Image (tube, rainbow, N blue to C red; front, side, top):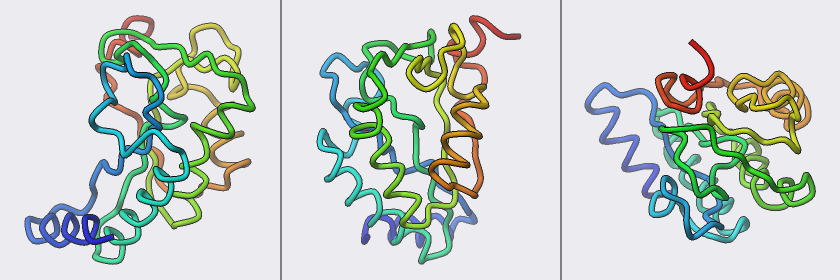
Length: 167
């Protein structure tokens, strides 16, 4: 909570209204080249608890928090800045691990969610369709099933997870 509070107080003093934090990817792949030290931890419960506290501290002090990288970038050994990683977990594991912190962040009132450029066939089997472009993931899962009504942003659109397949 204090970390979110200080982030908001200092950021707002500079005129910043939104942070692209916290990273709530569950760091379960030791070969992950992009999340690793940015992650809160390896346990979905701990990640959820600490992320919710950060979100509350940040937003209680006037700054919009952004939970990222939906639907979960922790179990990949590839960098979406260069290519489109695949998260090959089944739906049960995704619900239990990757999506759990998002449920808790939404319950905590997070105002924004950043979507990753990831291919997650258990959530949308359309070949090589990034989560960031998937109606099944963005509308059906995030909006309808998880009930998120806030701001949805994507990760950077010049990343290889997008530009290698889309202009």
